[in-house]
Length: 305
Ligand code: CP
Ligand code: NVA
Image (tube, rainbow, N blue to C red; front, side, top):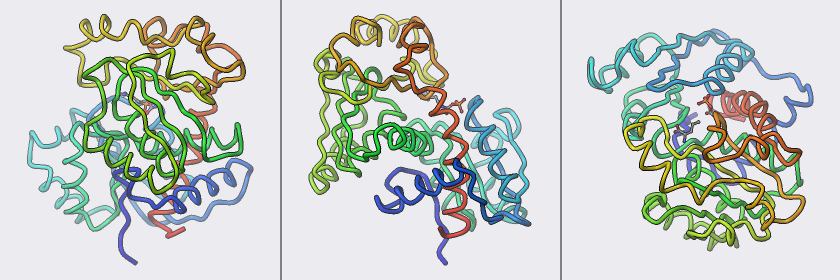
């Protein structure tokens, strides 16, 4: 079998993506999981901090019978202490695969090129595909549909990009409301729009949050300043102020709209405390589902199902 990497939402076909989420739903209901990682050792390479991604993958790897080494940002200084391809060619001699959180998507591509085992994207500046899996699992559990209207309010960042691609894949409607200049990369938007044409989906980029949330099934937001953009934080706080998810914005949305956030949240910035804590909020379901989907993606890439 060819090795499978999961660097982007687009690395799994729509039917495979649904199958991974359905497998995750079975694990959540208590199904036994295959020990596909028995005798295997993985490295978790993290260039940025993490709570959810690190812990869920560590738990998942162990539950599937594997072992792992966590490499923190300062441990190997990916690409600085030595080139990424050299890191990969060393690891290739010792271990069976990598789960990596990086700045540049290209680092993942180089790791994947030089490692015979699978490489999984645990977040890059471009995408967060494992988050999108957990989010669509949460969406399915909530409305039992793959085609939904998802309004993303805020930055056209990695999380927005992966959700845009997955929504396009499933034939849903993705409406991003962001300040001008903060859209996801044009090539990726075009790719999502092309995909949506085939699936009957719809991708819209707007600059008016109130318009974006009209008719929404789900409102999603994420931090205004992603990891690595700290120098822009002050400027971003000003530019994004009209894009806060707060009770006033919720008044423009259907009464039963659900609120999503990948966490960590900056309460009082992109979302108010009352909205995050409200009965509309799904944030801790999303967090729980990171574990079930981490197991299912590992089973898919290592076990072929
Ligand atoms: N949502 C998410 O990826 O959280 P962490 O940064 O804590 O892993
Ligand atoms: N967009 C955020 C997501 C964190 C899970 C970041 O990249 O920092």
